[in-house]
Length: 158
Image 1 (cartoon, one colour):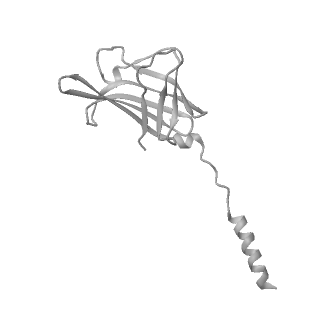
Image 2 (cartoon, one colour):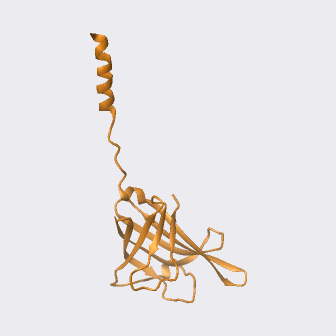
Image 3 (cartoon, helix red, strand yellow):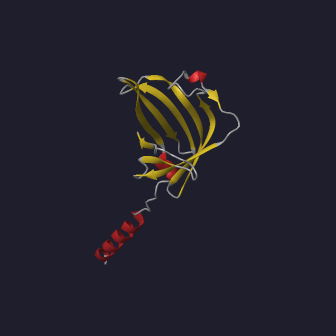
């Protein structure tokens, strides 16, 4: 009789030891740093990297820094903008709502000291990015009625 109970006990233990595997939340999947870099040539043989970052936290907030380096160098020459805000994820896209947006007031230079950037007052900015490759890539979504010449792509760095 005891031998017949062993398979039954083993079956019961197997059933109760299996736990439901929860799908990770979108906020935990997007968490981390994303980077987009564009190389430009400003004069013969003088190249700069325009680096844009998005840092997502699982609490629904993000921050961003847009800075300039010499091509293929990590030393920051200066900044073009920085901001923070909140984000939401729905239907395969992340929507960023910018707050505390600091930017250059000059359009003929590629960087300046971070302390010299100016706060943009009173405006709320939104942007949408398509989530691709299982949260390893974010692609800018051009708004309706806008003329977008290029599609910015951020790649997850960590």
